[in-house]
Length: 599
Image (cartoon, rainbow, N blue to C red; front, side):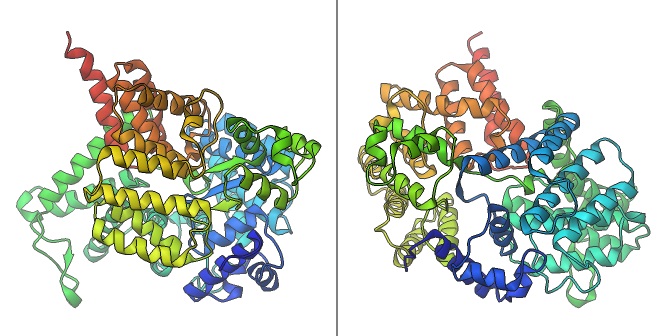
């Protein structure tokens, strides 16, 4: 079903999500808004501000990483300042972060009172979350830290510990603040509280990345609060560490990984004692007997030590703290663009005159003010301008325009099958997605056609030349390829960038066309790499710029390739992402070794 407005589509989406999770209205809205307000949102009778919209989605298990967001310049300015604060904290620049946080509060009021309105409470909670991290870096005492964090928790989770946590629907940010407040209690917190949190996380509506962002932290904090541990407790905590490491591995993340490896090392040393043979006991549970049998603990110890040493070496090499000292990764919002900038850049890219773009939509003065960040305008006008610029009209969207949670979940699984080259499973899934969404919407047609062509290539059904031709046709549903090849400022959707990157994979690398593609992507992304917003780039950035960096190395532009490589590695280490780290480190070695081969 296609809804008339984005407000109605968003309402239907969160309603379907809530029903699918089996949550009551009161569970989702507690501490955020009234049940009546949430009902009005679900029925499309009211709209939500970005902070409330994000908070509701997060409680329903939907992260911000898979979306493209378009904001008017005032909201975009707030978003941009928040992301710069996060960047400075993650870089350990407490004084710079503090200065910017104070400016943010001066402009937007996050440090004034406790906040009664939803937006005020969420702004205040953001402020306190950032202030706590800054004060920790400045050496604040436990009492001060606990006061800051408990206030932050109470803003949206009233009456914490007055009733069981089970049954509450919370976001990752809220779980994190609860953990942080607990750790600053005397003795590192109460064991029963950590166990209750971990039990709730087992049933929470979290995907694999969401679990990776919070479960390892809970394990580390639980381990830290238990002063005296008998053998059974030690074995249980060791099993929890193992599970946390496996969760991180599956999600390609490194949150608290070094700490977990350190905890495992301590247990293994204690378990083995002075005799390696004493370690021949398992970390696998034997049914209800709760025993551990048949494990090679010396082998596990050797493997664990190797991982730990590799992490320490890489972090030391790049001057980044090996311990997970911040939680800014929970607040990063990717894929956000300013509506004014997108319209101005896209219009010029396509060679459309201002009068031509606004004809029948708005007057020229309205367009000029919009493009120059002088005044926002009605959502309906923005949607029509976007459509004329061959962009989706939705201001918050994934690669598909749909209100079906099932379709979005299937697209995530389809990406997994594609990465694993399971073409048969991917084909069945793609057919199912096509039955759920309409291809009358141009961006849906583009996304699904690109998936289909990649599947055909994976099966060996088309040649490289035919693949490139078909992929160009898919791109040109929304953007002429020749427009991308021209010099000048660019705005491309994630899907358009993916189409071009796919084409580049089969192009002749010595061709002029291929080299121009490398130049255009570098022009697009160098300002981002030089600034403080690199962490906000969606996954398509790493995919494309990793490819561009590699090609620069192949072309002998080793200094430039090294610079891009170092920027990406540092961001991966700061954000604790593992997916492309091995590739980036290999490229660094290759760029170093290549000149040596000619000496």
